[in-house]
Length: 143
Length: 246
Image (cartoon, rainbow over all chains, first blue to last red; front, side, top):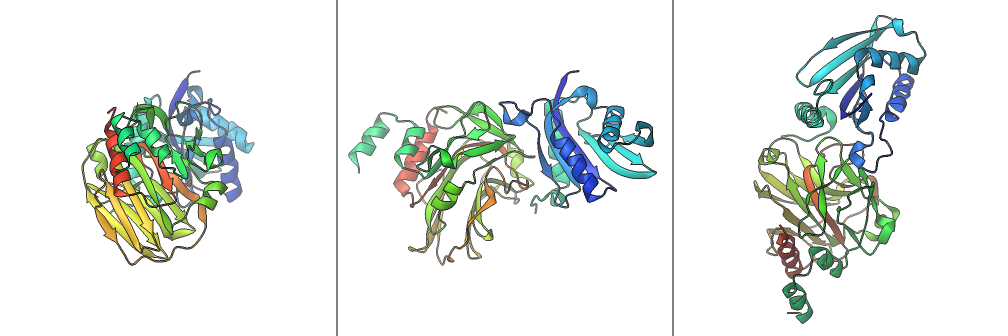
């Protein structure tokens, strides 16, 4: 295990409000330096205006940043069998995105800005570019 | 001219001390190197301390010396400066707001609107905002009372430190906009009458609200609030002191 400082994206695709809250509560506890004396190392987030997506910045355990590791973690969070969750990975411009499916329904999307193992600077730049391209949805004002 | 002020400047007094001499109700230097507390050195004391969310501390020399300024990532960094103490001490009827700001690069003058310093009472109908506009190469100071907005747009591509100041007086019926000088950029009259209480989620350095939105990208330093109008002389002195040590 080593530390990875970067930005991740979580989007609820088909989840109840209770399930979303369970997930968000778990995610807010992520991060291996949440008591750091440096504010930028502590887990902090920004919520999309429709409350269906969140960007987190934290220092993460990089062994948990793989698609399968996240699948296993989701299974634990929601108390279901690991094999009942499938996933598919794509690589858009901003990094890697994994879509998780349960009971044949796509439930949530996880993105790692800059891609797995990206430098902090690369992850930050990818996240900034993503927000610039999706400004209105995230509550930013553009001309 | 006040002899003590002349002597202070002749001795090269620091910007930090000069600000304290002007007796702000709130003054957050933002020069911490660790911790999540943004200490208030103004008269409201520690009860008006702010809380960092995500900013990268101590990155570049703060203007006027005496410490380093933090970097805000333009994603989810800000300083929440709401407090009950500030709610009791701040007024949109009479006062001044000031902050030193610096963008990360000239490209940051394009794209998203970004707030450097923003306080709203209840809603956007009563607020002041110091911001980088979504209009290219434009920096804006804005005062709104009871829905009547007074705004000045400055054309700039500065990549150094800049001092923006907004002063207001409902009794005198004017809002005055300043940047990098004690010479007013603009004076607006016909103010509305402000109303409302400090919005706990929208009293922010480096953004619009604690929920995110329009976050600052670049560096910020020495946010100040006063319960009187700074004079042109004081503002010029602040700017001159901010240039020392750079």
